[in-house]
Length: 522
Ligand code: BGP
Image 1 (tube, rainbow, N blue to C red):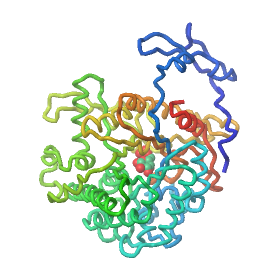
Image 2: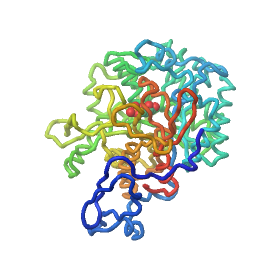
Image 3: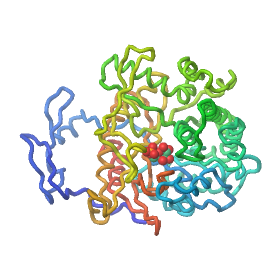
Image 4: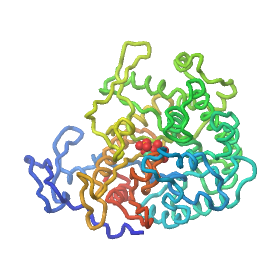
């Protein structure tokens, strides 16, 4: 493991850069002094030209986040822990899915992943070196209940207990996610999320975890990305368990997932000390107006509510929208009024994973009141290396940070928001075309820095307007097992050598540390 100490500050290397400077534009030849020596032009709020130096000292700088804003990183148990058969962990549905030929893009699996189960202490130090004050991790249900329910496994509880203690000892606030997709195999064998009993089992498991950890964990996320694990696991079949259900069955799975969330909220409240906070961590279908004018913004609000009707909307409103029930018709989920009350149980915050706007939206005179505008094929994109754009792509849409948080307030008056994930799969293989060499052994992931900074600017725009975003978790602390993408797409601030398990900070780790330390965009 390499520490961040001694990471050189970014030097300008490679091709000429063009930087706009007072008095015109000039090329910055390779090997010239760093950008700090230059006065970069911007405009103040009145539109007057000012240099970066003036901006920093004039008090008009728009880069600060509110006091107490938490900077952290996020991971998930299955993607980092390895040790799948250790200390009594039961099998999960992902173990078998990953072994299916063709299920994982590069043929890898998570048996070792990044060996976090054995290296968690060192990994907490990696966080510390980032100046991070919070960490979002997930608890593996099959470590706690190897059979999904019944007798808990003390060794599984002990692992997370040690992790939480280590975090607290290092002044890092633990944020625990209860379900990040590793369903116990035994439950899957009984129908998994197609079976309503799985929702009840999840509630019991959540309550039990709270009874063991809530004395030291103050924030719990129920389920990670309802829409992703349901739509891709049971709709397109690209994630475990790889099913392609008919619409009525798929709607029932959606319903069981949100019901499980509501049951977990109630169980945590029953078991945890007062003041424990709980909420979902969803990747909403994020939308942004094609043009920021009142009519397109109105249409975007409608789109956000309707496109998320089966997940976020029902959790926040405790009811399915009329349009959702009309559209699903005979395929609508079967539910009771009591289910809706449970699903709508009051929560303390919304966690939102924001990678991109799924749709641009414009006003339309149709019954829905909005229309989505497709992205051009030429839209700038972060791709998973080697994977066609038709399968995975993240359109570069920094404004998703602004609209993805602001709309939560506009629509549902959400009082506390966390960006529970944000990042990009920027992967640099030394022999790949366009890959730039490392600088003094540090991966030169300028793309991750430029991408993240643009998103942070839009997040800061939201907080400056009073949108109550309390923290930002970068996905991810370190490279890890990216589900059906395998080990190839690399999201980490730290690069991991999968043979030696050595962790090395990328340049983006230095960027993150600068932001976290200053509580501002660096
Ligand atoms: C989220 C998952 C994470 C991680 C991340 C990567 O969906 O919660 O576990 O896999 O995605 O980003 P992407 O959305 O591009 O797959």
